[in-house]
Image (cartoon, rainbow, N blue to C red):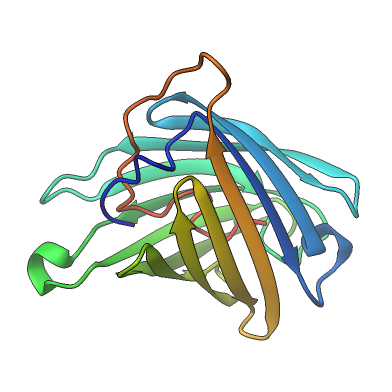
Length: 199
């Protein structure tokens, strides 16, 4: 989650995800988001097998500096495995490469889920590898979900192991509408899009 990815940058982003062995709401998920301004994205999440539609929002409230961590706030559907509910969360993240000379960016935060009406501690971390590959470890307050991703231009392909036992695949595409132009690339050194493993 460090550095910029100008080739992938786009105001719009479409995502699709499939997870084996989950309830209908979590099995198939699609998202469409629009970056209103460089630090704010709004969108919708649709889970077609459950006819469930919910809002998405991500706001980078404080940008990361060499010393200061980034602060992100957002909302999405509740954590993986919940049959209903909305989640509201914040995360604080910081790249440690300056101190340990490794491309590691941990994060910690909290998420309130309306399904069980609990506030949970969430956390995880991202590790960058050569050739546009990365690994993201997500703890959603209940379960751990490791993810491995590879990015090519504006496309990202991911393999997930939900709850350390249910395999899944995900794909995302960043794009612009004709005449929409391109904006400044988003620094990728903080958890991006639902760092707390929101469904």
